[in-house]
Image 1 (spheres, rainbow, N blue to C red):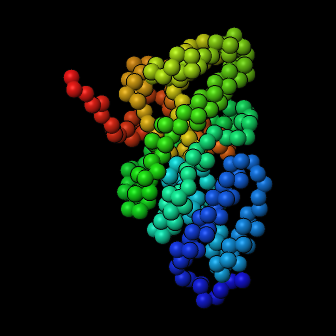
Image 2: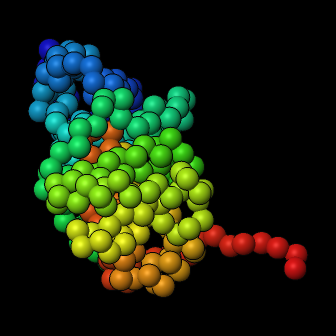
Image 3: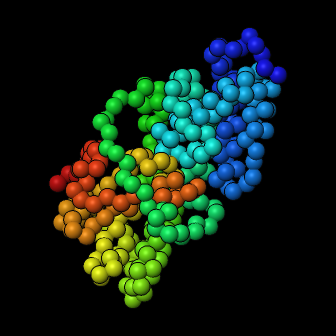
Amino acid sequence: MVDQEKRGTHWTADEQDAIVADYFVMLGDELAGRTYVKSDHNAALVTRTGRTRGSVEFKYQNVSAVLERMGLPWIFGFKPARNYQGALVDAIDRYLSKGSIAPYEQPSTVPLLITENSEVFVPVPQLEPAVALPEKLERLIRKFDPVERVFRNRSLGKAGETFVVELERNRLKRQERNDLSKKVRWISEEEGDGAGFDILSFDASGNERLIEVKTTNGAAKTPFFLTRTERDVSRERADVWRLYRVHLFAQAPQVFTLRPPLEKALHLNPESWRASFR
């Protein structure tokens, strides 16, 4: 039942914790391909907190906005609403700190269907000026750094590369180049990392296409690591090197592609150093 006295009041820490926990239950179901009913979850939160249905719905959207910033998947039915309070960021921090972020970083458990390229490939996101984030959100992102998480998540990276290998082979088959489709090579799997690209493919004319794959379960604008070798090869082979950014991978994979010079499409910030004694 809705508590009229709560209209217009701030959510308590207990209420924030309750809705964050409920959101992650639904997200877990969605990523696992299990059926759930959003309206049932909303009704249960209304009963528990005394908040209105609309207030609960908007709070779900706030959670989506924070997860999007963190490079995590979010529930598509709750479009990110970004005017959230710092207390919600604290609640998400509490939830993730007492559990594990790993379940939301896994590749899709549902078989990925290789569809027509027009349904998979999307435009490159617009480059925006770097802006300071609210302090609590900035601290949360540093704590659960999406760049570091994805960089160390070999299973996700390997799954994304597998996806792109199949995309390329199917593209060449549709272009009636079965001969080239058979020549597509997964370089990072066959020879190991270090070549500056992951996949050797071709265009319909037979020209090489050197593809570096970066995969995330998060949004298109989730940041990622670019190694020095990858950057160098992108400059040396600018005519054929391409970056494939695979995003929303666990739910509805999409890809945008970048060609050198990368500085035109990305903010490139050095963040690590090679330390030695000689």
